Amino acid sequence: MRRITPLATATLVLAANAPDIDIVAQFFGPYVALEWRRGVTHGILALVVLPFIVAGAILLWDRLARRRRSPDAQQRARPWPVLALATLGVWTHPALDWLNTYGMRWLMPFDGRWFYGDALFIIDPWLWLLLGGASFLVFSGSARAQVAWGLFGGVLTAVVLIAPIPVGAKLIWALGIIGLVVTRIVAGAMPADPYRRMRWARACTVGACVYIAGMVAQAQAAAALVQAHFTESEVTVRRVMVAPEPANPMAGSFVVETSDRYLRGNFHWLHEPRVVRKHPPIDRGADGPVVAAARQAPEARRYLTWSRFPFFRVRETAGGHQVVIGDARFPDVQDRGGLQGVTIELDHSLRPIPKFGEDVSSQLEAEESGEMLPPPREVFDRYVAAIGGRSRHLEVAGVRTEGRIELGGLEGNYSVLRSPPDRMLMRTEVAGIGEVLAGFDGEYAWSVNPVTGPRLLEGEEAAQLADQASVLRALRDESLIDDAVTTGCDEVDGKVCYRIEIRWTSGRETSDCYSTTTGLLLATESTQVTELGPVSVSVVYEEYRDVDGLRFPVRMRQRIMGRDQSMSVDRIELEEIPGNALAAPDEIRALVDDRERPHVDP
Image (tube, rainbow, N blue to C red):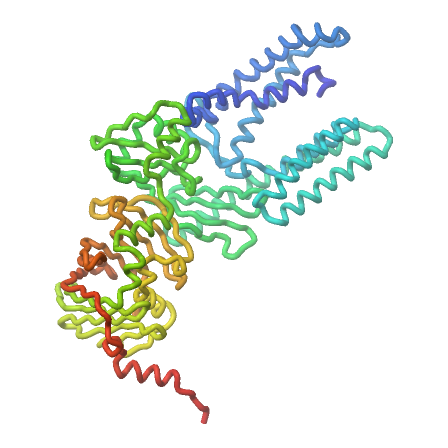
């Protein structure tokens, strides 16, 4: 290109960076920067105007500085080639920006719609290798340049090798670097032929273009496949994003938007199944007067201008409400400014509470001093403290609970005997149904009811009864929990709570809500396995009672298989439970004896 006009490279470099002049908005705060991000300076009007500005700046520099400073440089920069190169540089910038999940607003300032390619990760080592390799092959003639390229390549290689990417990708990178070095050595041993190196460089550039085109095609195919997967599962899909994984063209992570939540998981072309839901859903939480008021705050409006999959988490505070706004593209890190979310504080009249000003550091300090979304263990510890403390519960010799139950107009009585660490017997008597027994003796789980008779429970049925019997489960002991995630805030009977998704070591999964003010468990949802199959169960704890320094729920509202039932506790006694009171009935002991008795083939 330098044969076409002087300053060709300078024109391309300046033009390729010109649209990012919107970076000056960063000085006015992170949310102002988001509002301007990839907007006016990247849109259709800028594509027309910026090339002339860049070309004018280059020609002015050529006239006032370059040729005066270097009298031997008699050739002038040619206006039309400079303008053509400036146009090429400016136009390729938004095209490359479009390729990732951040998106582009092509039609600005006339239309603020976003467009997303979802094809390349924001940092792509294969483009580094191909395009950087092209530059290396051409511009490494001198020893000084080779040293500089060696240092630069070493830094990039260190970044790739320590990055959390597949081992295969690191190996391919290393082989690519070795291949470029060998190619350059071979080229240096040959007679000087700049055109040979140019051909190799063009081959690298063509390879980069082919790679980009292939990633765009596979991104569209992956999104279509994810949408088809959820449509077949009778999920009403509004939008789909499959975000590329770093250095792995075969994999991605998806976000599926439904009417009320976002579903997330992983996608891989070479795995079966290709689409796997991996994370708890994120409730959009976009309705209600509190959220509507928070949307009107200037920082919220600016953040939502950029946000693609916004969600809202509301909690009550002493001064009113706190609304955390995040984006499902970045669900695990919120409340820290910029791409990662914004927190709006509202008073009781739903008016924004003034912050300490627009300075970013003071704003972050203000958010740090408020109530942020806590980790699960912090919520669990607060809950255990609210019900009396771990040590106090572990020193109790036993608990006897008696109360009443109402099921679909039928009334009855129930009792629960618990003996730490994990023995339990439940007895329920309902008119028209009869007596139902269930128990766990530390080894066997069993049940007796008028429909199925005596049964030794196995598998998930046994695991869930063992969970209910364990005092450590009630204390949310770490040894019984595989994973827990605080997914946001919810509301139970007008009380704001933290929603935590729990996966227990037994394999069961529950969704709990803990009060943001008292720390008590307000509700839980789970799937229970019964003799009729799996059923959804939700429990709301309406009232707690103090008993000798401990707190127990005494009014509960349940919904099982679409039917409502209520339970109320009349008496709770902390006492040692005799062993015979927890003994299984004779028919269960007979089943246990039969299982343990050795069988001899005739």
